[in-house]
Image 1 (cartoon, one colour):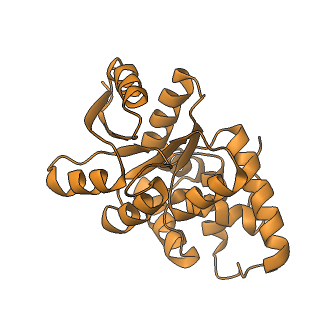
Image 2: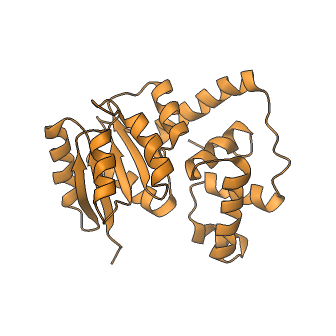
Length: 221
């Protein structure tokens, strides 16, 4: 049996939030640990509750404290919690901004229930998940920002780290990478932690963005 994925839902639209909760509670491997109506409410509940969520599904536009600011706080105070942005905004700037501050997936509110459940399971398994439209936006945004930045220095990464980074970009799990390279999962984790430190990335999603930016990997759509 799969381990239970603990979820927190954050959205100021009560009807929408309750609809998502109803949908997710029908899944055998998903449990809603709490709901929150805005970013401040979320942070308070994270501090109060002993049981922390594995994944937060976060709206962006909310009163008191919006999703972008709440994500920044959570990435600092609770870095192990993964954040999926679920919003009605699909502009490139919103997507790029949320990924930059630490969201590991980005979904538009007109997504299908099947896509939402798939995203939760993929994020739980791999640490991040981007669908085709978000990957396209990341690539387009990075190409335009790269032209103004110039190439970044990548020579401090070892050949093995580059190899592992390329496999991460193919959305491979730690165990899949270990099997592919004939390494132990622990060794792969060590390389992955070194990559995070060397590239100053907040999470696996940041590594993917770094890899595209430096042409280490090209994501196939």
